[in-house]
View 1 (cartoon, rainbow, N blue to C red):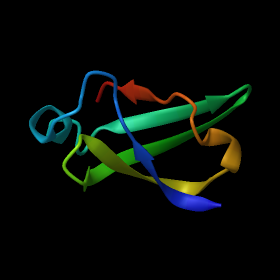
View 2 (view 1 turned 60 degrees about the vertical axis):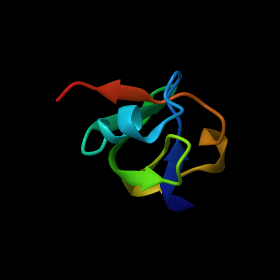
View 3 (view 1 turned 180 degrees about the vertical axis):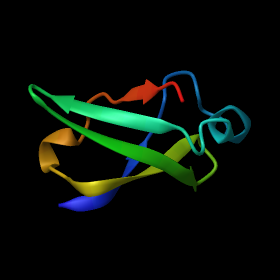
View 4 (view 1 turned 90 degrees about the vertical axis):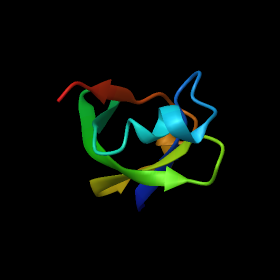
Length: 71
């Protein structure tokens, strides 16, 4: 299981809008289980973000939706 994943938010294909998400928290929910992570930086120039979780994220999370938590 990996502790870092790549995230791309809808309508965020440029660096400037994606950069505003750095430092925010995200949550991945799977039934009763949920994992909370933090966006730690940009990945590339197409609006992708790198998020880090305390526990490893399972493979089922690939291609699924995460929610942005308002801090």
